[in-house]
Image (cartoon, rainbow over the protein chains, first blue to last red):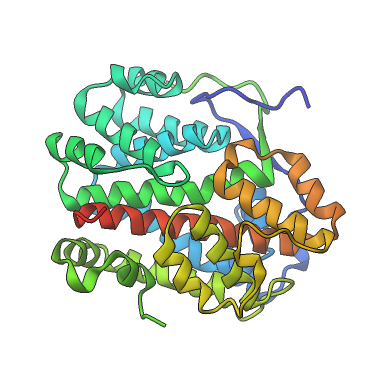
Length: 197
Length: 156
């Protein structure tokens, strides 16, 4: 399909599945519980409807993912989004990259950082961002390749153990998300949208 | 079976730095353990038995270089050869499954719609494709959390 996006971007993209999502009208009680339908029936994404084929795993995954990205304290949200973006760049999940690069840009207002990450130029980043991106990239490898050098750089940049664990969790949960989003569907451009500022 | 697989494999009981880090995110550690149960021992396993799931998790941990995690999963694998990345599988359905496990573990960036088509052509139903995908994705999450905690604890 000519509208499939293959390059990294912080623009808003759409996503279409390779397999048929659960049809909400015919959903089982277990699926509805996992989807946590709101009374106002706001639109549920195709991605979540695909995952609803296995409602028990979806039901447990949602609060874990939300906690990792949004729970109070620990690593700043922008830096969790940076770790998520770096992991998603490594795994080449264009859709995940688009969402989380966009969120980083909104939070940190430093689009130069994301541009360097898209080009694989972590060496051009300031020390703290470089340490985060290097760690995220290496932890995402198989076998995971983050080691004492990456830990030393994180600690030299001032991250506490609590912040490092939040970074580990963000990178690890994007290893999870990328392996779903990038393998079960593809990103495409829907209507023309403004480039995310 | 440990109450918390991640704590056991990361050595929380003998490493105060690991224990402290995990205590600071205890809800997320509990949620990780709940996801582990949902994916390895679900109430409705569908087309993937509990033993098959443990064997595939053992395989994933082996591919990712975590021998201790692989041994944890081997205990629940019932001796299944699916756990061994060096052995080839007999039937088309199993071959497609193992190909997908290995691809998504080692190089998920290379996955395309053709890989899903390969599963469908080998007889995989949609719901089981999702179950398999969640299993692979979760174990890859879990082994990275363990690796990161070991680093925090100063253990290689």
